[in-house]
Image 1 (cartoon, rainbow, N blue to C red):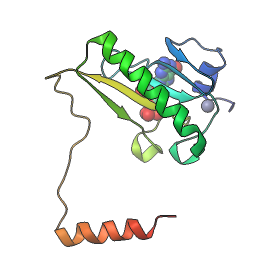
Image 2 (cartoon, rainbow, N blue to C red):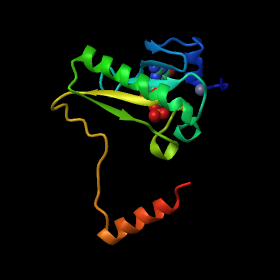
Image 3 (cartoon, rainbow, N blue to C red):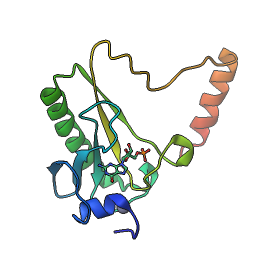
Amino acid sequence: MSADCIFCKIVAGEIPSATIHESEHTIAFLDIAPVIPGHALVIPRKHYANLFELPDDLGNALLSDVKRVGEAIVSATGAQGLNLGMNNHEAAGQLVMHAHFHLIPRFDGDGLKLWGQQAYESQEAMMALAEKIRNSLS
Ligand code: 5GP
Ligand code: ZN
């Protein structure tokens, strides 16, 4: 547990949450300010700041619970789709520094645009960036 982490306090039951699911390694609860009602967060019980801090061996538990909770959200809300998102670091919009997945139910024609897209300057620029990223794999 990390002092002053709001999600650690939710895990510890020190502040209330609309809990959906609890398992050995994760909990899921409704986001207090939903993009669309039913928007939920799946988080590891232990405090890890973001994706890059998460141990690989938590992956199965997280993905399995994300799928299970996601299916339940779709079923309960009557949604036709679901967005899975994760903000990592402030520059990406992360406000709570305890790793979490956003599950957002989506409805045909709901008009929500999660992000805008742009074009590369050229095909060469795109290929050069792919090579740079490949060379940065560790
Ligand atoms: P982030 O921007 O870090 O990816 O998202 C943090 C999310 O946590 C936000 O969508 C915000 O609405 C939600 N949130 C912040 N504080 C609380 C809280 O005390 N309870 C619940 N249920 N959600 C919270
Ligand atoms: Zn925490």
